Image 1 (tube, rainbow, N blue to C red):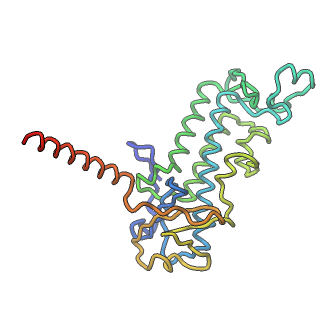
Image 2: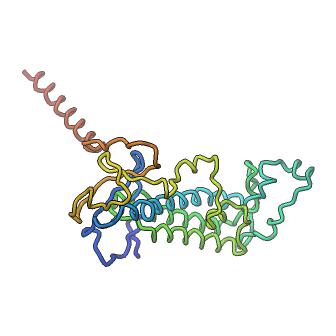
Image 3: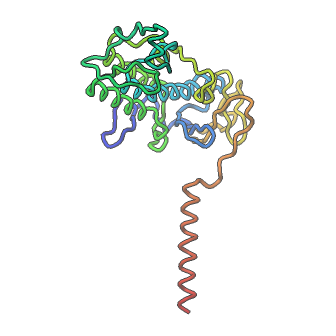
Length: 282
């Protein structure tokens, strides 16, 4: 593993097979790029869809959810028990509620109290040095699985997703050596106990048994192999779309890319301006 000093992209060590000798899938959901993924034409769709691509897709979502929650941990400390969240100090006193985890889950070094106006977290936050540990790790983890890796022509693997999760878990343990409360959403994510019911995040997750892959307006059927659709050329590169079963065929990719369209429009505009100047000169 290595990191390019000039970018935040992750550059994986070379595997036994070069990615140029394998099929490269540009995976999208809707119009948004997700990852590049290397495989072979001999892979079964049964393996490719749930075991590989869906696991990476959902794993990246988990990393993103944790990365969005850690800044709250850095600013306002650990999560309050659910029965205390959203209550005012007066209400907590009136109901005689107590956070039994407050004295157990203390950040390393001195804590800096910063009240959470949303009433989700308890207030004693990590000091600036520990906050920086969390912030830096979030940046590194996000870069590891970012969809910008597509632009860098880097294929994302499940090992990279696991490494991002390990980095985040390690940073949290450095800052909170006694651990987080069992109800803290970050700990629940690490332990795969998260409850996304009724949240926007739940709409993004694709259960493995419901995952479908589409290419050229064709669903890649389980029970077949990738070569049944794309042929036996191992140097093929295609765009596939992942989505939940029952959503119908996704929109086809435009024949001309957005970038190419912009270039064509710019060329047309310049040509029109040149014609105007020519007419005025007559």
